[in-house]
Amino acid sequence: MKFYYALKKEFIALLRNRSALIALFLMPMMFILIMSLALKDVYNEYTNANLEYVIVNLDKEKKSEKFIEQLKEYKNLKFVVKESLEEVKELTRDEVYKFALVINSDFSKNLYKIQAKNLIEIYTASTTKAHRKLYFESKIAEKIMALKIKKMVDSMTMYNDSVRASTPSEMIHSHYLYNSENKSGIPTATQQNVPAWIVFSMFFVIIPISTLFITERNDGTFARLKAMNSSKFILFFSKIIPYMVINQLQLVLMILVGVFIVPLLGGDKLDVHIDFVALFVISMAISFGAIGFAILLSSLMKTTEQASTVGALSSIIMGAVGGIMVPKLVMPPLMQDMAMLSPMSWGLEGMLDVFVRNLGVEAVLLESGVLVLFGIISLSFAFIFYERRL
Image (cartoon, rainbow, N blue to C red; front, side):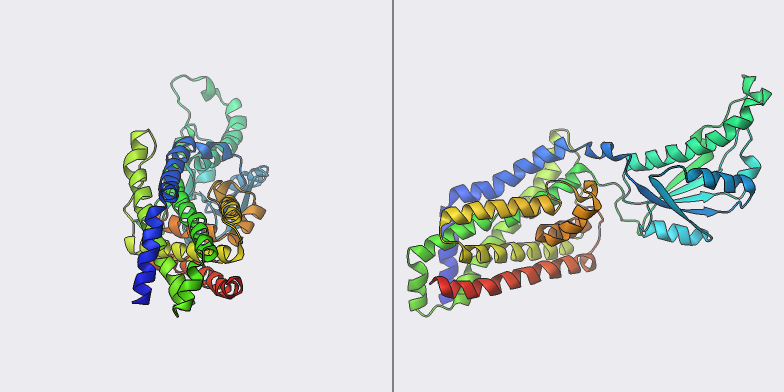
């Protein structure tokens, strides 16, 4: 019964704090709308990023070897040469490399033909962005044409209007490789931003939790409950459940915004053909980690002003580092490594596994485990500081 009344008190206090509820629901909804529309074409500026790919040469003639040598001139396109066609496909399918370049067995035989076809096969990892794919294909076509031009300059067929030279699309065949038929290819701005701001909004409960926690501690509510032999476990866990309910409501509303509202304003519709069990697992883990951290922060702060300031700053910093405000794929390698220090990064990766990569429960177990562990550690320290504050 003690837990029931403590839980009832928390729900009543939460529902009375209307300004906090508005912030928890309205703010992330606005972020999803704004960022999904603003970042719709954000990836177009990264076509000059460094790319790694793998080559298999089925031709093994001098012309194909010369072609491979010329590819080394691209400093931002690094490659390794393998012998097995199936191996390079597997490496690309598993996203060890972004692309697999297959030089077909008749490359040398057909290279200098006016209507050369099927010289090259390009296999692309399923999550590679479209603009990177086009950039890579254009660079490969450029080197093929460089080999052909010198030969064609001396050929009279260049001046024969009835003969049409091959286009790059005829010489190169391109394919995407997927780990499974259900795996999504190219994530949209909505698929990036809805999961990102769901995670951020869940962690933003830091402010209302810490404000309520400190108010009850300062006005003697905790002392009275302790005098009634209410354990600190009851006090803490009665705060966890209401905010976990709030977090799940945030999740539902954010998804509805991505599915119904964003498309009305010209953005991409959120695809919800996902594993909802995996979504539930990762969302509960994010919620537990966020609430645990909020309670720890509350036990450390002395005033509501301190809690609000530190809570807001910590949320923004974790969001900036963790890939919420700036997608990790546009970060330099050092920042991508640092992102792992933010619990929001683990939550976002789990959400992307569900919404973008279309994976199941097994794929989110690691991220969920890290977040639950983060929540347990936070609550453990909160228990210690709780005793000192009373």
